Length: 480
Image (cartoon, rainbow, N blue to C red):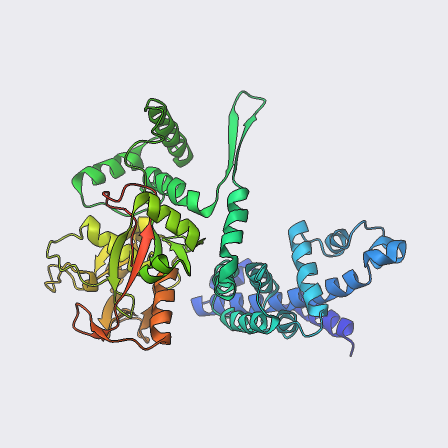
């Protein structure tokens, strides 16, 4: 049976599969989840066939063939247009299908072969391709990285897979970080449009380093409305409650906040841009790398990388703060005994955890709350770094309300399911790219062991970080 005949049979079978809202509503939870999984598998296989057909059509529509090419003969100006008309897909989906299809056509393409075999979905393949794009590395290393990412595609959605692929690209081609950073910075722009009804619109494209400032201000202004952290401090709590009751939309609140920021900045002396109190941009980098001018820095929260030259410039202008880490990435205990985590301790938790520690959550540190893994009152839990983790509001409430537990064992944190949902504990991995790289470096080489604050024997290391505001402030450059 030919591929076309077999696919026609499969489509006929799929058409006969019952599709009923009433059947869906009467199905068990397990049945719905299995239905969703199987539908996803069917879609993945169908997308692979579409990519293969699109790739072959593109080969037969090569520009060198002119009007004799398949797309032109069918009345389409481009292969993308023919895919759209034949499949009813969007322009973006057509472009992705053609890109992945061309990879499948390429001889010895690791990614193309994975798609053809149905191991990797078309969106996942596009995420890997785009994430690795621009890596200046030997082909065999790129192929190894692609195989690694194909294996990880089973547990990562395309967005997270793309982010992971960019991390791998930076590991393969660290020397290219500076040029990629410069290209992104070169694309920054702020455009003003005048709308016909009298309104005006700003379109702002900003680079990752600028995002450290802009996103911090945006989160400060809107996070209580958008599910950000709850506040225990009475003044902060009152402000958050007032903001939640505010009759303005979240978008209006953000607009008013930036307008007020600019209004106040406009009254400052000409030699001061935004005055004191600018938000911190913590850039984490091994202290030894900062001194030697090697490696790269990682922006806390976003995981974007900066060249060592940019980090050195930040450190020169604003100074650094050092945090001592053990080989597992723990910031060594500050030994505080107060009920609430101090601002200084929250900086250390942000360095170590990089955001909400719950598996699969991507909330940055600014959206997180400090959770005592030992209940402060019930278990007499200490307010020190080893007994605390960062969790976003949603997962913090989920943990307390549904009886999940986080326990620390051998320097690592494990999430234990509630008693009514027995299952194995899940290892919680830091979201901080800088910490993951630090741990990998320490495990890759033997070093003279030191002793961490918890008494375990590890090899301490240090990170440094530059920030865009004076080091006397809480969020100053951090070294770790």
